[in-house]
Length: 174
Image 1 (spheres, rainbow, N blue to C red):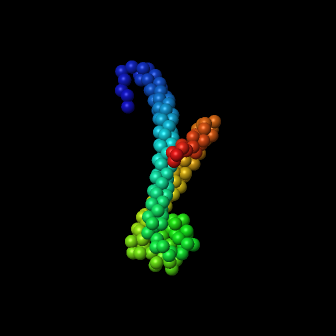
Image 2 (image 1 turned 90 degrees about the vertical axis):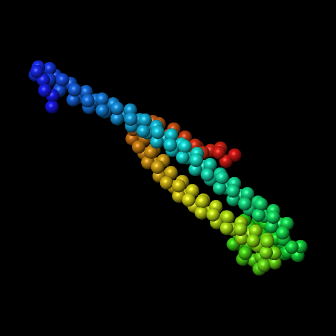
């Protein structure tokens, strides 16, 4: 409580200070909220780009894995290997699919090991893809929540925010 020798001054200060305090707090909260929204938006843009980069790396890793495996497998196939199976094996990009064929047993141990190792690494990449998909779903929820908040605060800008978030990762995989 304020103690005051001049009661009229204290009343005036009290009547002025309290509304001034609330006005200042309100204005600061608007500014902080705006800053928080901009930080959240920047974070979402960065996350969108990061998720797309990870997607590109995983796709590239998977393609590279099977390109190299197919090239090595082609060289390792015995001369009498069935032509239809040869074509399937070289295009399959799936170790389990290759192992289903009886002709898989016609491959030497090194070629079978090559397919098995590629299958193991492919399983690791597939798990990473699943993790990435979960992160993308979580990102979409955060993005929608952000856009709903923005729509309440600044309906005119929501379409711009949405378009920028939608295209934030475009062009990364090139």
